Image 1 (cartoon, rainbow, N blue to C red):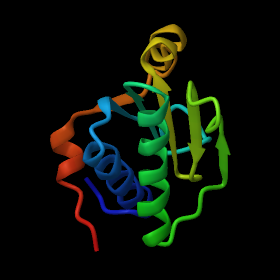
Image 2: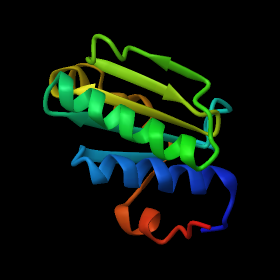
Image 3: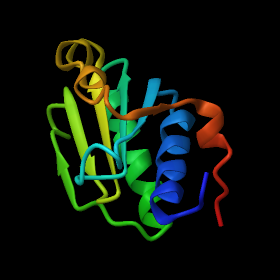
Length: 124
């Protein structure tokens, strides 16, 4: 995988979610099918507090690495929180809302990455 900013951002976000025990982290490379971002990250928490903890950890790790969140939607309700970092979009759902919206189906034309591909990304 060629190193670029979006991959470094992806690695930071993925590790932040994994660190807080996010459920079923799905990463989709959408660069070839959309101009909105390079990567789409989808995961869920176990309850509203867990969803918010996942979001806060991503925000903290990204901020410390110099990446600003362009838009944050849904934090208070904690059913579906969307974080837009430009090159990557992170979606943190409640379990039921994730099943309902089924973003994986919507983005099925993208390339789904497995954990080993993300773990192989080098951080500076």
